[in-house]
Length: 62
Image (cartoon, rainbow, N blue to C red):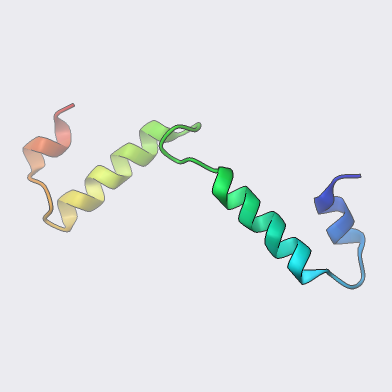
């Protein structure tokens, strides 16, 4: 049984263990190299353009 199933089946959650699990998961997620990285890159570029950090020409150029 995986940890998620154990957590769901438990009546009393071990909050420290669940926090440690969530922390490990977050640390292993790399939005710039994982699936959907191209979408993440587009969104970051759009955010930077809206915030005025870059011009429109540099956002669309690769």
